[in-house]
Length: 308
Image (cartoon, rainbow, N blue to C red; front, side):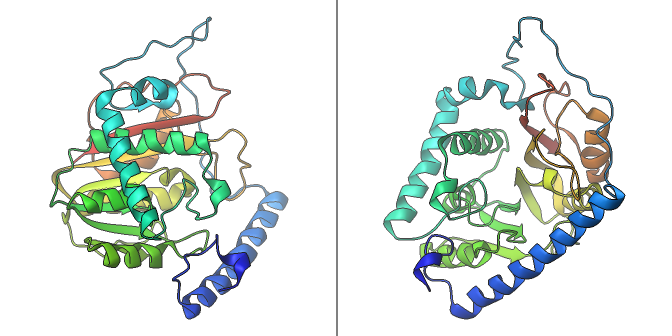
């Protein structure tokens, strides 16, 4: 593989797979640009408005930390990461990163990329919070069957596999950098029970009803259209066993241009959150039902849990 690609793709990626990714990247870029041009002419199509927002307001810019809430915003990220139980999970995931690096095996940054510049201190900090928080309250146990949405080649999923879980991942490798192949390659080299499937979001999942004990989705569902999101949530409710939990994180970016996709998901837009996420799944919020969101002019990151 040419040197200019050495930080973009895993070095052990087969040539034929590399060429497949290059062709698919070109096609996807063309289709995306065409959709964006159309949206600029006619306006965004099929975008569900955010609706009325319900934000916690404080004249002094202070929002008390509801320490008993597991469904929560990352407003209190620093406090959460300082907790011994959360820090222990972060340290265990970091140990997996160190182990993989020592063996010249790849894992992705938060942006689903292998490129070194994507590993920024702040993005990795946010990712550490959402990974550790979602795992802490997922009730996941060794030996359980785990489904992850959109997390191929993440250190988090390699951590789950290292804990003795059977991990299945659905991803479409939107960056076309080989994360599906890399997941399966690393799993084989490490002797882990982990497999990634190349599948677009919103499509029927290739698993039987009630197959999984736990589901994870780290900052993925907000990047889908409402239609695809609702279809995915219905499928997640189908493949999760009764009593199983589904753990999610989502973000909301004020700077994201609304063309093909919206700005994301946040707790303050509760009606959209209910209609796009909770109702289609057939599941219920697990833990606190009060979802605190503040500072409407700022971006948002939050984690929440559903139970079947």
